[in-house]
Length: 118
Image (cartoon, rainbow, N blue to C red; front, side, top):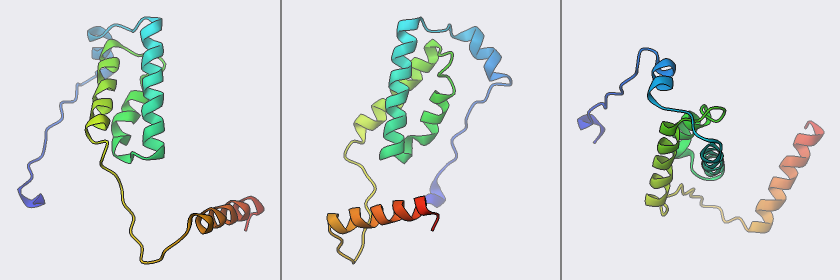
């Protein structure tokens, strides 16, 4: 269980921005566009149904303006994780049975009350 779990060390550079600029060149425009597209796709997945990739996607989003080679390589890791865990998900249980019509009606009422300031 959790009692037997060991912490995983994370290496943090003293000045990661400066060290990264030296270690990894900026991407050419075509690859930068590919990186931004991939990051946008991961953002969509995170926002819509996969909160488990939030940390990785947030780190990738920081590099959107000037992506480097290391960022493109890093963007492939959450993508690989998503493919490997495609059948995983969050399941909500309830004793109450709600039809889709009732669900959409309740959502619409909630949106209407938000717009009216209720």
